[in-house]
Amino acid sequence: MFLDDWHECESELSEAQRAFMAHIETRTSEWLADIWLERTDEGCFPVLLVDLNSADENLVLLTAGIRVEDHRIHGDKLHSQLFSLPDEPTGLALIATGSPEELADRTTEWFDRLMRRQVVRHEWVHRGQVYASRYLFSDTGEGLCQMYNDALAPPWQRIRLLIAGRVKRRGWIDTEALGQPDRVVTVRGETDPEPVRLVPPW
Image 1 (spheres, rainbow, N blue to C red):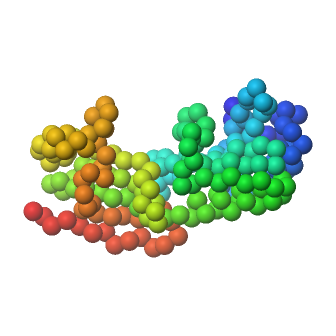
Image 2: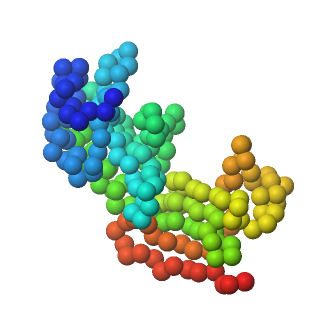
Image 3: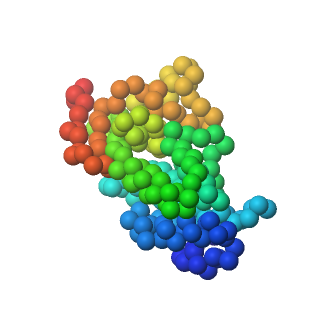
C-alpha cells in the first residue's frame, strides 16, 4: 500500500522503524519519494522508493528503494510493480546497520548519489530514424532499459542476430549485440550534455 502519511500506520511499526521515519521524514521531499508498506508474517516494513526518470521523455528508467527493518536497511533496484528487492543484490545494493539516525544519513547519501548519477542513451539509427536505444549509467555501463523497433531497423538485421544467437526469449533483442551506437546523448546527471555524435548519411 502507498502511504501519503506514514503516521496512519505508525502503530504497526517497531520503535526503531518509527525513529528512522521520524529522522527521514523531512528529507524525502527532495527525492519525491513514495512510501510503500510491506506486510509480511514477520511484521511491517516501510519501503522508501523513487523512480529515476528520463528528463526529456515520460519514461521510468529505474525504480529503486530502501527497505527499513529494525536497525538495518536494505536498498537496491526494486521490481517496478511489486516494489520487491531482487533475489541477488545488484551493483546498486546498500546494506547497512546502525542507529535510526545513522541509517537515515546512509539512506540520504544513497538516494543523493543515485539521483546525481549520469545516465546516457545510446541510439542506433537507420535512414535517419532511431530504431533502437539503450539507457545506461555512464560510469559503469549498467543497462537500465531499452527499445528495439523492427519496423525501423535495417532489413534482415533480426534474422542475422537470430542466427548469431543474440535474440533472447520471446524475441527480445539485447541491444548490446548491435555494436557501437550511432549517437550518445546525456539524458540526466550533473554534467553538461555530451555532444551528439551523428552517423554518416550512408
